[in-house]
Image (cartoon, rainbow, N blue to C red; front, side, top):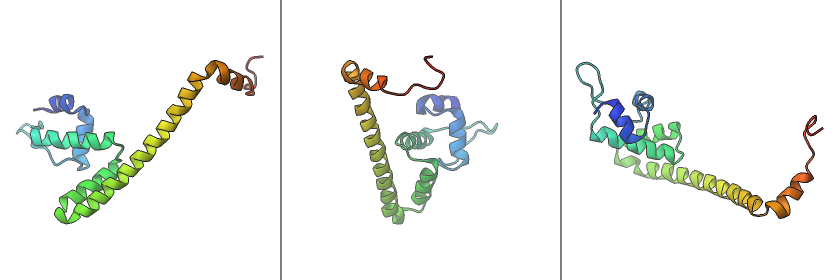
Length: 131
């Protein structure tokens, strides 16, 4: 398949696919004689893996490190597991922060008339506003 088709399937832009190939997050993609990428199912699995990792909040730098470890073979499995656990912990911390923010917003919404309006009325206005 060409890069446009791979983009539609993977949900990654063509530019992102080219970037991931350039920085070696995915292996080099085979090309036709005219230089057009010929993306196969294995390439697509790499693209989907990369997208899933990025969706989980894994940075490009950490993803590059993970791929380098993967290329080292089975002896790097403990290091890969450690790296994934660290990323999982960071993701959980973000989830906790977002959950607390959602709870604060829910409280404000649920208590808007009985609490939020009164609290907002006590806030100092911005200079030059409401004059």
